Amino acid sequence: MTTTTGMRIGEIAERSGVTPRTIRYYEELGLLPRAERAQGKHRTYTEVDIERLRELTRLRDLLGLSLDELRSMIVAEEVRADVRQRFHETDSREERLDLLDRAQPHIETQLGLVRRRLAELQELEGELLERRKLLQRRRRELNGP
Image 1: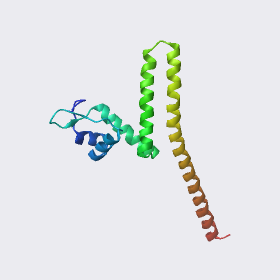
Image 2: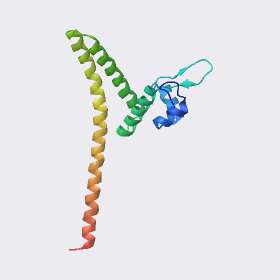
Image 3: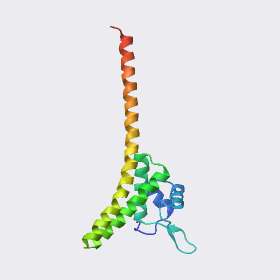
Image 4: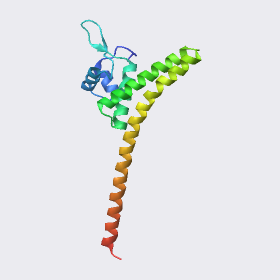
């Protein structure tokens, strides 16, 4: 039985649906924090790392993000998580307002990435609808009056 800490790269790769090479690459790019390594031992990962990898994969696949865009999305989410934590730790109205103002540009960054992909998908949908109309028209022409 696996505990929530101490998993090796092969296990986390299998559980998250990515390859060990992808994990190492994401660590190199800073998308995934480098795993802890006791001196002379293998890197070890946690359930948090698995969830992070699953979210990275979901965003990459769902939105078709480049690695730079993926990094922007993740950085924005990390900042928002920090702001959210600090928001709940303070009772100061002014500080809460400031925190909300700081979170806004990061949400805008994320929305921009999503909206660009949505526009591309809508463009593709339009092209496919036009192709379908063309095929249907040609079919009617071949069937005659």
